[in-house]
Image (cartoon, rainbow, N blue to C red; front, side, top):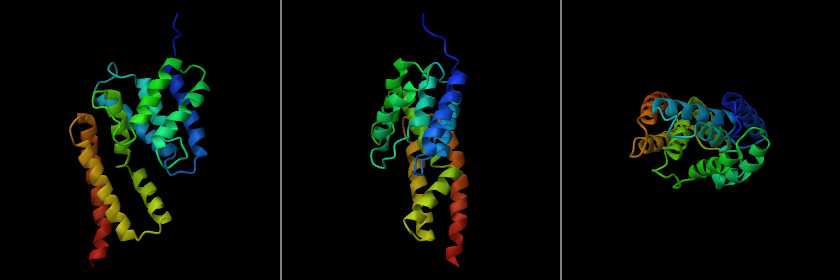
Length: 202
């Protein structure tokens, strides 16, 4: 007989594990990033009424652990390798779902998303949408500061980056919900960045 899992309790445990794991990670993609991607995925799943078309537990778990690697290069691929051992420490996590969590994490690596798999589309959208968050602005300028880039160049570069995300999300094979969230967020960030750039016109 298959064991019944309390999904809310399990997700709470997974969040705690992700926070503990990412708190020791020195990269800029911290727990704040992971939980933002997690929340974006929930909004997309709800908006698309996709609860019966995707395994919600798999999608949300992948969101929490997609950036656990300390490696900058091939981060999603490296994170996927660490997932089995981490999830093995969560008593009630179904073992038969681990490979699907890995598949979703790997799909975030550029060019690996399948347009036929709704769960892969959702996690990629959730990750891309996080680039349009207030937290993303903070993270981006910490990175620019570490690289000793001039402020004006950093603002222009970040604006180009979010515009690329905007075009990607408004392309084919993306959900209406993600596009709606994207269009709302891009307006707010564009205004903020344009206001920052106006001082350089004087």
